[in-house]
Amino acid sequence: MDLLADIEQVRAEFDRRLEAVKVRTADQNADVETVEQLSIAFLGRKGRLAALFAQLGAIPTEERPEAGRQLNQVKEYIQTAIKAAEGEVRPEKPEEESLLDLTLPGDPIPLGTIHPVTRIEKQIKDIFLRLGFSVLYGPEVETEFYNFEALNFKQDHPARDMQDTFYISEDLLLRTHTSNNQIHAMQHMQPPLRIIMPGRVYRNEAISARAYCTFHQIEGLAVDRNISMAELKGTLQYLARELYGPDTRTRFRPSYFPFTEPSAEMDIYWGLETETDYRVTKGTGWLEILGCGMVHPNVLRAVDVDPLEWTGYAFGMGLERIAMLMWGIGDIRYFYEGDLRFLRQF
Ligand code: DAH
Image (cartoon, rainbow, N blue to C red; front, top):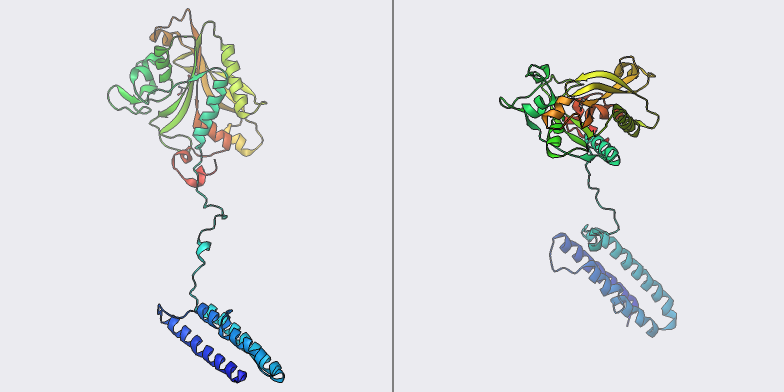
């Protein structure tokens, strides 16, 4: 028995079989001996090398060191060859379990943002709900009666003109303000009442950075016994301070609306520090944010409320305008273009 010769033979056989594995794997042959099987056959516990190592004890003592050295050499040779073959032959397939890693963070799902007009509307609604007001909605397609007549617009009032109003038919139109809801509210509810009425309005205006064919308003109406201008002022000052901060200064300027008497506009003090302040306040430092007044007796009469028993105040404001001031938005058209670069900032 010549162990050294056996070792050589095993090495040669290994070379042959390894070569076959590589060729057949490259051929995509299904039933090939794999590198792993080859490894088991030669390096395994019952493999060819183990059998050779077992023979070590049976050879003469003086031959053992040389045989042992050669055996270890072959073992190392086969291990290295198998490692190299694994890298070369094994297809680049990821391990099964690595396809699903439950510890990875999920793919982010892009969420929408709240439209700035919706945000302002909600903010204002919350302020008035704290004051005991309720919220009411009314129709956008309206008749002349609700949009104009009951609100004390005279027959020839310029606001009824085709230039401002989108008419659908002789009598049907898109409401030009949310004041139409004052009439609906008083037809359905008995005073005392305190309500706000948000909604979309339409105007046939030339589109520009400051004017759009549609925008949003919030209308307010309070009808009770002994309501005074003082309550109107206190309520709207509270609104301004909740919206723009506790130090916000307000002022009321006389104005005119057909459906209120007396009528006023409320300004907030914006400041005169920057050039932009000069431009948006036209050099006064003050900015108009809403119209208001005591409900005109003719309006109460139109809905059969006795103006000798009941008095009321009303106000109306444009939401886009308030949002533009709040966030320094320079062009009203941004609200309607759906540009994500704009919308994502809110
Ligand atoms: N309706 C008015 C407009 O569209 C705003 C307004 C002014 C509403 C005074 C009111 C008010 O209720 O009292 O410009």
